[in-house]
Image 1: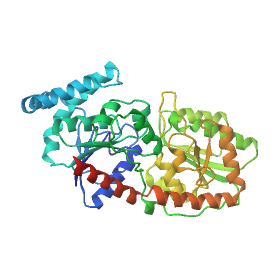
Image 2: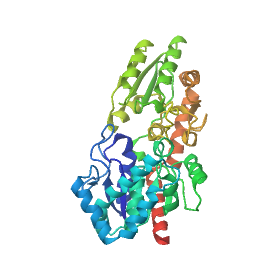
Image 3: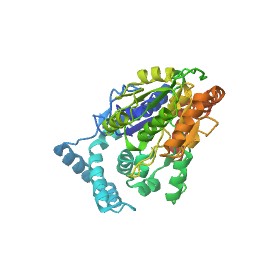
Image 4: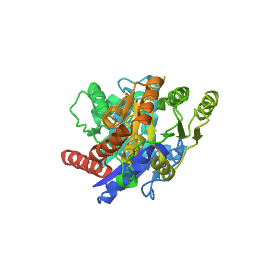
Length: 403
């Protein structure tokens, strides 16, 4: 198969799962070209996990390039361009400002149509419903090549754009969780297929080491962006509760982001002297920290602007390594972390419950051992990149055969 993958930036530390998926598809013999919306990562940059040679970068578009691209489309396929423009300006469920934004994205897409058609593609796929999914929609409308997209979290719940339009126009949609699948179905009028295909991990990258807690201190690790939806302020409160109860612990909180200074100030106020808060780290360092940790905590919450996590890959990585996890009952997380079976769950924003979960792990080596084994087994069954990549390749092949 000849595929085009789009996302915001293949260098982004928060999108390493995309480059892993691309690498796996290429290993299976598929020809995967890459279109990145931007050259610079919006957040921290990562070492990509696939070859990015030949990647085309769409934005920013020089004015002259934009004029030539639009003129070319008007000359060669005016009906397609005008039909797509009408749909963008009438996108159901979107504000007037968003519709104007969509129109601008359509015009920008005109500048890469010739390159896209030169690839002789079978299919276009976007990771993130918006804005990458918007460009996949417009490229499909301009070229006739079928498209699909994988939605994740903020792109669906915080800032959805043209979502109903994309659900109606896509050849198919990938759900990363049953939670997202139900959300799609609440919006869709047509029967477009939407299998659940998880963002898996390479199991060999995370060697399993069974945990069994005996001696204090409890070594705690948290990894994620310092953003509201990660809920780290509640973790700091939970650690303060552990201190008040005389429970020995030490910890690392890893990740950059807009709230990093706030978290450091909060840790100082709470006198959490056993917590080291670092900036973002590459995967190699995170794996080292995982190997040394007794428990991994990701206390996700819904942010005030509606942003939430999907199924965080960081939880998969911790479970694969044998590190018991504590997270929250939010979005698709309970599909990965099954309470008291593959990990422990607290209610979002409840520091007392987080502290209680950590206390249980500090004092119950049998629980630690059971969760360590079960977490790894669950990731092997349901979040194995090799198996999930085969599923998405089969999904593409099915769409291509029917288009």
